[in-house]
Image (cartoon, rainbow, N blue to C red):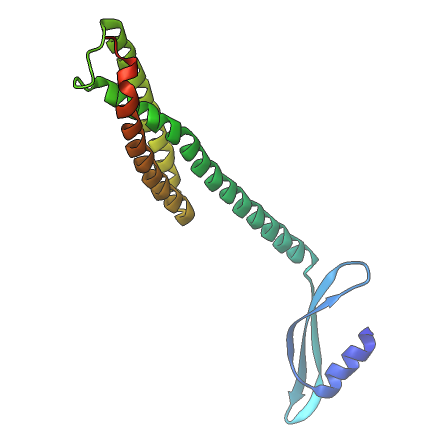
Length: 178
């Protein structure tokens, strides 16, 4: 036990710094040992004990908090990427169809239809700007994964827009008055 370990250290005569000892009551001590020699003769021993129980508990608490913050950051990144994708994909199709319906080669719109189309266009573009703001805020956080998700989202939206425009060209005549 404890006494045998002390005797072993004394016999070895090797200085020890920062050795940790766990006690039966759950506390932890840190000890230093220094053999003292004077004029070539053994003169004694210096033992220093410090209670580091609180320090260890605080270190564990900080480790746990850091782990929780990392998990929270990962959840935030996932949320931003998901919101971007879930909102942008259908909204990009709406914007694409609205742009296609404005094309005079497809046909003319009534005054009411043009008014409705402007409302759709204005509000969908406003939502796209809000999504872009959300992504920019995520990028400013400095998280690399979030920036990659933003770039991927922009790439996916461009693909959805192009696909939506092709579909709109096929479907737009159905929405025009003859």
